[in-house]
Length: 93
Image (tube, rainbow, N blue to C red; front, side, top):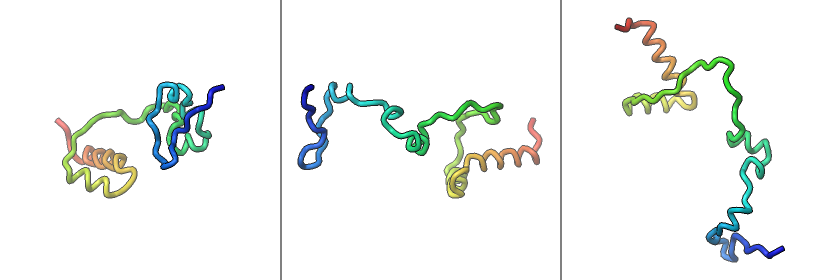
């Protein structure tokens, strides 16, 4: 078995990786413990039983974005709730 060249030199600098180095690498799913994969969000979630929302792209003003993002995690859910509230008080078409 051949001796492998260290990835880091005496100064702590990482050397340029070769194709041979990359062939020896393992996918993260094989190398990381299951708990860390879950923490990193690598474990896929199962399919929803009944999808409740549709993915879309929407352009919002910077004021709206900053106001909702300032409320912390879950801001997209709050945008959805605000739109539902608006629909309950306004007739479309």
